[in-house]
Image (cartoon, rainbow, N blue to C red; front, side, top):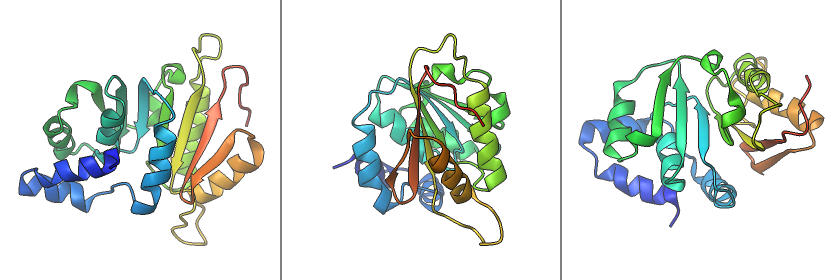
Length: 197
């Protein structure tokens, strides 16, 4: 049983209105669960950043995977149910809910895990990616950071650029980028090499 399966079981025990909120929102797609689980169990992340919270499912899953870790979860929408869900799961003391966009992140050097799953447009995902690179303090950085991109294959409409187009650019330019499944990609940023645009 994965952490995702355990979380799904706990969600069934929630009050009906909160359970419906979480179930209607975004959860980890079944075909991404095993590859993501296999990636996460190889690491001992301590401090994460999530860009795009939706229901809070990914935030709670991160807290369950890493019981000694903390997560800053950013979203432009303030949903009271996010706090209710995170509190009901018993992880509110380790998840910091931030209402805003990636511009409120001033120092990414503290994070060893970053999930980009907010605006799925090319421009939105690129802004997130560029802000992350811009706010890394390469002189005082403690170690590598893994940046996970979700929905790297998803194209909303062929005539509009999406995160899929950004992932193609990243994968072509950065040797430390790889896919963990068809819809998720990872970039490992090393403190010894600053990524250039």
